[in-house]
Every structure is written in C-alpha cells, then in structure tokens.
Image 1 (spheres, rainbow, N blue to C red):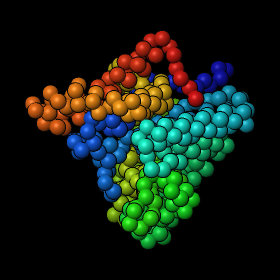
Image 2: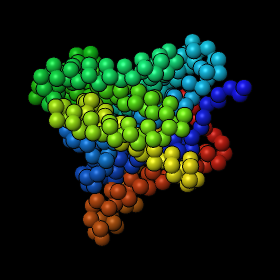
Image 3: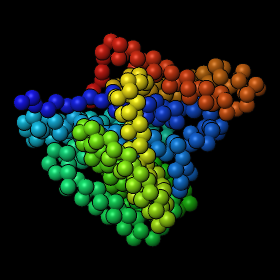
Image 4: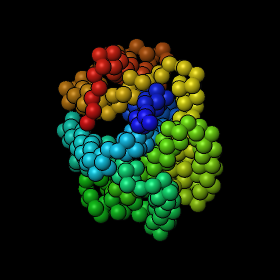
Length: 358
C-alpha cells in the first residue's frame, strides 16, 4: 500500500502568488492621495476588493497546512516533531515581522515602534492552525471554528461599541501593548491596531476555514467548496445585519463573507488550473511568497531611507503622466511597476529553483 504524500496543487501556488502580488499592488501606490477606490481598504465598516486580500492569504495558509501536514501524520511522522517544526517556523515569521517593523520605524522616522503586524498575525495563525491540524480531529476543528465565531462575536457585542478606538478589540490591544499599537488617537489617548491581538481570534477563524477546505481539496471534493462558499457568504451577509463587515476588527461577518469568497475563488482556480490545464499564472510569487513580501518591504524602506522614493516616482511617472492622464494613472502605474519588478525577481528565482523558506 502506498503511503500518502503531501500534495502540491498548482492552483494553490498560483492563488497564493496572485494574492501576494495583490498585496504589493495595494501597499505600494505612487501617491497615497490618488488611489483608485477598489485598491483602498474600507475606512472602517464595509468590504472593498482590497479587503479581500489578507483574508485570502490566511485562508490559503490554512489550505496549505492541510495539504502539507495531514499526509505526513498519516504517513507516520511523529506529531510532536511536526509540532516543533510548525512552532519554529511560526516564530521565524513573527520575528521577521518584528524586524520589518524595526526597519520601517527607522526608515519612516515613526513616532513609536509597532509590535503587531501582517507577518506577526500570519505567524500566530499558522502556529494555532498547525497545532489543531496535528492534534485535533475534523469535528473538533469545526467546533473550534464555531466557538471562535460565536465567542468573538459576543466579545465584540459585549464591548458596547464598534467604533474606532472605542471597541473592545482596540481597548484590549491598547491595554496590553500601550503605545506600541499602530495608531494612537491624540484627542483621547486611546490606541488601535488593525492587526491587533484580540482581532487575531477572527483571523484564526479564517485560517481554520482554509484548514477544513484544504482537506476537501485534498480529497477532490470540489462540490463542497462551492456549497460551503455559498453558505458562508449568505451567513456573512446575514450576520452583518448584527455586526458589520469590518476588516479592522475582523468581525465574524467579515470572516464568513471573505471565507466564502475565498472558497469560490479556490474552487475556480482548481477547475481552471488543476483540471483544465491553464497556466498557473502567479506561481512564481506563490512559491516564494514570504520572500517577495519581505524583500519588497526591505526595498521600500531602503528607497525611503536613501531619499530616492519621491524623486523616483516624480521623474519616472508623475512629471510626464500627470499632465496627460491626471494624478491617478501615474500612481497606479508606479504600483504596477513595483509588482512587475518583483515578478521578475521571483521568476528568476523560480527558474533557478531558489526558494526562500523561513
């Protein structure tokens, strides 16, 4: 009898890669004052196309855990050894996020250091979802997902407000992290972090949806992806009548709406790439995802610290494009060029079979 091996789905690599490319596009406009609306996050409540990107990545983290870890457990690898591997990798991801924030603090001359962030949240969710994949049965994972959604929803409701700085997630993060949060309100002294500690409960729920979906994908049950996606989106819209769609708070309605959307997108990619043989466009980003994200951030901080970013944008894009096309086109053109530069980098790495893992 052949032992199960970790499956590598080209659709998952492609979707991960396009998600990272979308992160770079949204995070690097030439001019933050002139960005097309779909590329901006909702100011508070609501869900724009940009607000689908980070939950898509966490969803794929869950899918990848299911595809990588469960076959190794079934093959007989000791769960304790795999758990150590998961925790070490999670710690490295968090550590890289802390290093990036240290560089950003220096490059942008920020008023204070920020502890939490995108990579820190990814690392925490990776550790928790990996532990559940190794030590909990599917029924327990579903139960944990339900507990997170309902429990976190009740916590938010019990806080008495969903407004910026006044909600329970912001108050908890400020109490725990003090001035080390993303944003401080000068009028009240309160703090808020869109990737804070308490709202990571919602982000973990997104990752667990991906974990369960990854098991369906591994078994070839694509029909379950379509059905689950529809059910989750309907439930998310229904829940939003009680608690709004909100990325900053990662509300349960936002978890379900974005999780359902991710199910449908993954199902579509599975059909087109894995079954119909479409090219896995974006794969190069997908197999070097963290390297592309971190490397592009280091490049940005270097340009800022050297004083080159503003003149580069002005001379290469704004000065000649703005009179012809207005200020939005050069801002988008710079973002696309930024992504293109990193597409070349990851493509060369992929051709040379160089893959950075942490």
